Length: 536
Image 1: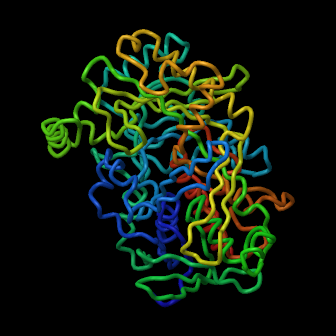
Image 2: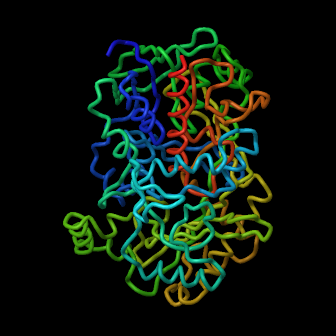
Image 3: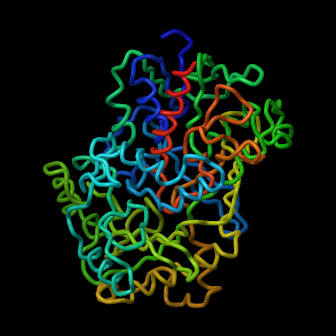
């Protein structure tokens, strides 16, 4: 290809791989996909439980840290982000969740026409091959695999029974619009291996002559001529280079780096940019604001029987056995990952729908991705599904290689604090309910000494961490909303030829894991982009 293409996509993550496939699919347009990290050739990427190995990988993970958060006792919290083909879909927990119908209807009610549940549902169906079979809400011919966990685990079976006694219905499909209930997750796996967007979307497109994939190539800024994006500047092999776009530049670098790239290029809050020495091209106050994330608080229990993944990983024989299970049959713990069980529940009595999610893991460690405990253990990871607290992403300087300032601002809202306390109490009640109670030997964390609301809240501040779902930093909204960054077709307000397509455009966070909703957004955006191109 020449040094100009029709479309440039920045970031080969959950959204970028979708865009690269769809925009090059008809053969009419040339596309260049940029990825700052390497190809997804590390074997631990493709083994589902391998994200314990990639969680702190210096090459495959950006390894961000937040600024000290006063609401979290001044702690700096580790934020992993994917840095390879597939982005976070190559290092995440593989959970296949859409969120709730009300999430998308709320987006539309905010003025984002066409983003209601009924309009998004065809794209959810389009993107998936769901082993539950075709139905009104499910698809069976899409690139991404939604795979049910076939092997039943005694801990998850007990979770389902105990949840039923507390009024939670047994869910076999959490993705029909109302996810309240308890059951097994579906996973983004295929034949026992991770099905990232690089596998699902990019691998089938790699041989196309009109698709160029640049790995180890970090975009350092946008080329802007007046009110129009013309291309990008990037660094590869130590050299600064330029690529021009004949039609559009699409920023898909995620909720941290998409606003960072925009701000470095002069698009963002004018006062901030001036303070950092960046020439203001377009004063958009919302770029980098509205940051939302799900805060996880992990309750850990010692289990009465040696039936946990801790027990299998503790000995060489156990490791060899589960390794052979995966190598020979693509089954066992290595093919599933960490979290098997799910509960979506109402922790606060006035919630209109489930407001807390429990990820139930059949192992335990002091932190996600850490070494497992030397006892039989399980984890109830609780998160508030619809936090009100808002943070920000701000560049620190004009250096594109300096990590931005991440102000997480967890638990800033009184309702968020109440939800955290109520969520911990519910998880404890679940653990005390038969038959789960017979399998719980002791509460390792927070421990019986933590009882009052103040003590529980302190525990949340001391041990809470990201569950890896940052969104909202380039939010969708009408041009009359001065804090909106993109319109309903994800075009940046006031800048031609530029879109943002990733989790940063979500006006509000969805009630569940964010990977599949991000893929849906990219599927929709592909149709918007191709539709506009056809009209020119």
